Amino acid sequence: MPTPAARLLREVRSIWQLAWPMLVGQLATVGMGVADVAMTGHASATELAAAALGASVWSIIQVTVSGTMMSMNTLVAHEVGAARFGRIPHLVRQGLWKALAIGLACALLVNLAALVFDYLSLEAEVNARASQFLHIISLGMPPYALYRALYGYATSINQTKPLMLIALGGLAYNVLINWVFIFGHWGAPALGALGCAIGTASGLWLMLLVLLWWIRRAEAFKPSYPFSHWEGPRWAEIRPMLRLGLPIGITYFAEVSAFGAVSLLVARFGVVEVGAHQIALNFISLVFMVPLSFGIALITRVGQALGEGDPRRARFVSWTGVAMCLGFAALSALAMAALRWQIAAAYTSDLAVQALCVELLLLGALFQLSDATQCATSCAIRGYQVTRQPMLIQVLAFWVVALPVGIWLGWAPAWLPFAPPAPLGARGFWIGLVLGLSVAAILLSFALFRLARKRAHLIH
Image (tube, rainbow, N blue to C red; front, side, top):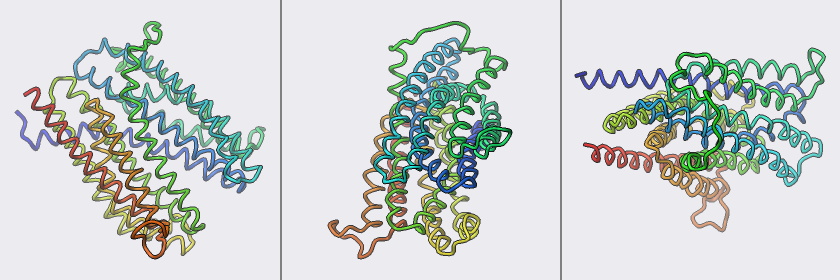
């Protein structure tokens, strides 16, 4: 029997082997957005504004779809753990029907969301270009939903390296198409922001096709190959997938929309506050990719342990993953606090923006531990096929704690009791985020502790 230290080391290694290719893939995906903004910014201010507005709407819906499709991860992981590989093809086929329906519905939603621009007092040209951006990029939503379903399938059978390579290829393709269509190279028209939309939409179709080809060819997929025959949609099978997936999608929406709302609420304080907020948020979003990758790996490892009928191992896996996230968060918090001036200077040469950004990065360092904890614990709980409780906790944390506290401190409206004598601006909203994430971390840790202990005691 292995010693506790050997057991811990083996589990850390297993989680890392799953997580690091996903981390590279996540960074490549984020890199697509960075490339869009950076390259469009060299076209014109109008094209940059159109791409930024369109991408902000697209990203909220895209992340919600990603969360909704995450039910595939835990369902397939349970079947892998139980060695019921013959059940997996059926799950994947029904998951793809679910993905197709969600992808088409959200493509329509992306188009309808363009109507929001009519209420933002935008310049006519920016409004038109941003709306056209959404109309084009919406064509990429169905393949994206289908890709995320197959992503969950591949991850749950421990095949994460193909996803990393596909994401890196998608990034390279996106940069190339941007260069061609934003600036009009190789005889193509110079389309500005619309070139970004073409690159993203066509890139998502390409990534889906490459993943389908890989599943067809790779030996690892043969025991559970899902495309051996045709199978129509079955509502009785799709409904539990939605019951698992929709709360995750709502959770992702709550978090992304809360951060988006903070960006809009900070805008009233001027360009310095907006610039500092966006820089700090961009850097922290990159850092967050590490605990997020650990969290997705946790869904697979916990699900596989439960599928094997070993809830004690699932509990051990859960807290090992949480400890890994906390260890990384402690290091990232120290690095962020120590290097905050260098980080700010790397983004901007404006001294006023730098000074405020340094303060926000210090607050960001403060919530590294709570952010990593809430991410890891919520993913571990999803591995138990429990999704409603994390949804309720995170909606509470972001929309009942973080945003109201942020408005109270950031805006300091006179009609609110005990409001500070002067608005704290972006600082106030970031203090709200610190408190909201702390609430989420505490409640989700307690929820995981109770759930894991209850499941372990039921079996043993």
